[in-house]
Length: 334
Image 1 (cartoon, rainbow, N blue to C red):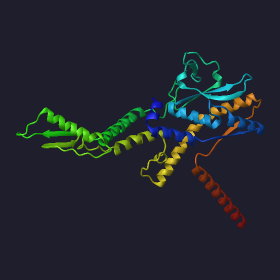
Image 2: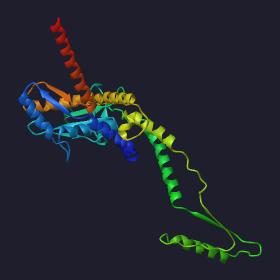
Image 3: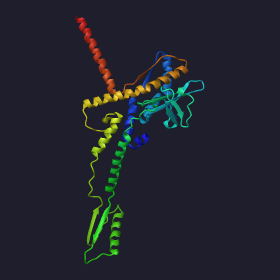
Image 4: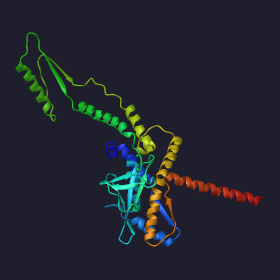
């Protein structure tokens, strides 16, 4: 259902795509520099799918499934010597997650009901899971009803414009009392009108004798105002994604201060998604280093979320430098 929502409502698919890209990349730091170089080389080229490689691709795939379905399941693929060689993002429809004896360790089964042979190689990431549940909650929860109403409006718009663009006419002939009407005359009028309307490449005239009335079917219908309901429904969708409207190309009225506050809120949302992915990345890094014979500490340094953060950091450094200069000058004068 959530996949169908993304296919049916473009703004939902665009919002999730932007969040995935805004989560950004990560840098790995180790206490042992040789281990750090080896780990970075591995993360930059590690296979993550049939046609994808690199830890950036793995992060994007994990965050995408986490936002869409609420749960992301990944597997660390080892070779015969026990060394980590690839990362795999599993499809949820092929797995079953449950909480049984140990509430802190979910049980992972295949679609056939068999437990996976190496659960220690599996990582499960859940977005705001409910108590005693191994599944997370998609950010799209609550949107099926809103999206259904929005699709009905769009479908109605399409039908109305199809009717208005492809005009249909009602031809009414009212014979006089002396003239009368016969079936043959009605057939002649219908045939002449059809011939006049059949070929749109040339202009043809329709000539009739008597009281003939031609009207466009539905021509008196007034198109309902759709701007307000569409915006109301779209606001509900955007509220679930946490993105500022201007990031999705919506030119709604806003102020500079409001935009700044929305950017701050978005930053906190992205930081939250990063905290969910960090344990998975650390587990992958430690598994690779142990296979290569290293047991050093690993730290993750996420890239700054946006250029605005870079500017804020630069301004903070400038202010600190100015403050230190003032303190030194004041100390010298004393």
